[in-house]
Amino acid sequence: MVSANDVKQVLVVGAGTMGHGIAEVFAIAGYNVFLADVNRQILDSAMDKIRWSLSKLAEKGQLKESVDSVMSRITAVISVNPDGSFSNDLAAVASQADMMIEAITEKLDAKQALFRFVDQHRKGKIIMATNTSSLPITEIASATSSPELVVGMHFFNPPPLMPLIEIIKGERTSDDVVQSVVDLAKRIGKQPVVVNKDVPGFIVNRILARFLNTACWLVAKGRASVLEVDSTVRFSLGFPMGAFELADYSGIDVFYLIAVAMTQRGFKQTPCPLFEQMYKANTLGMKTGKGFYEYP
Ligand code: CAA
Image 1 (cartoon, rainbow, N blue to C red):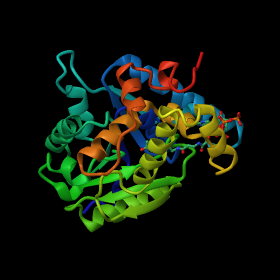
Image 2: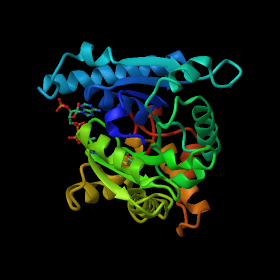
Image 3: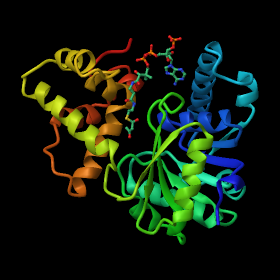
Image 4: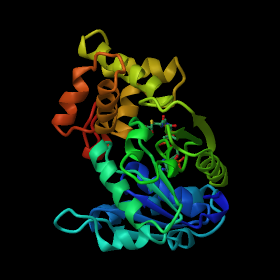
């Protein structure tokens, strides 16, 4: 079966906010990483962000080797052809990798298509992990021929700094795969928490969804301003960021899609309309320069 000792080459698909941070964390820990995304521009931007983050860690004496030497373990790969089909390059790296971590958009059909493809090209019994924030692992795994190899490995933003990883067992994930991912999480210096119930949102996002939704309704109903809510969260509750700072930081699209996925699967809450409006207006927070705050 797949053991953490067998993992040397890691394929990370999706080079956005989470994917590039996950690639960085594995590269720092000595793994060879293929980082795949749909175009060169996204990959170049991801590599720049990784280099920036590594330089920050080096400045603080938190990197055991040079930035260049960590960067040399990351290979960028274009994952799709111009017609949208998966590329031969992705097939080639999928057939070399000992483990895949998917960190693409929070949409079930897109994730299932990717898992189906990797499942067809994998070299054998590799770990197929998803960084999904809210979708049940069991639903993603149903697209593969080996759901026992599919597991949730949920990192937090920014992956190089946040210690927690939720490891989620789907209905058919094997105990060996869960144990291997626990071992891997420790090897990359993280604190794993195993989530045995594959419920939408797992543990953190079930709490966070209520927190952000409540904060959002306070503003939507005119009971408090964005700044008032964030000041109380930061300076009284002791969180490192306010609710709206966090939404802007990780992406309003991310939290909106999490809320949609969870609500569709029976999570009871009345979604605050501001998130949907901002999602549709493409005001997604830091990444678009405007969210609840502005980022000139
Ligand atoms: N890599 C390396 N260094 C980084 C970095 C990164 N990715 N991001 C920030 N830093 C550095 C900053 O440059 C700064 O360096 P200097 O001291 O040299 O200036 C230092 O870290 C501190 O950063 P900041 O001054 O910007 O601010 P901070 O002290 O508030 O720390 C933070 C930043 C660690 C992000 C902190 O604000 C924090 O923990 N915020 C909460 C994050 C959180 O809750 N994440 C989970 C989101 S939910 C999620 O991800 C899951 C999901 O499913 C959606």
